[in-house]
Length: 124
Image (cartoon, rainbow, N blue to C red; front, side):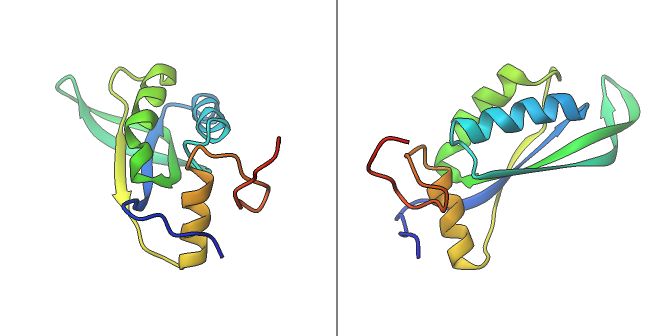
């Protein structure tokens, strides 16, 4: 079982990108910097208004599993790597199976962990 951390809330950061290459770049950066435990990516169709015109595009949706304390850092990184002028970056609080949610929390904490997500005291 993973430790519960008071004051932190697990959630999803939802991001859309224009292509899989940009999504993969962002996802790898988020996970490697331990800002996210996991990122899922999949194609979607989007209809939206941009600069007064209705757009109809194919995009990549990203579901970033993290905790609320990482949101500002995630936004900064995403904006630095994103190809859009105004990327969609939303935080959704989630509930779920507690052991999995604890895994998300531990693996997005920025602390060194072993492969199962338990805190690791030695060198990785």
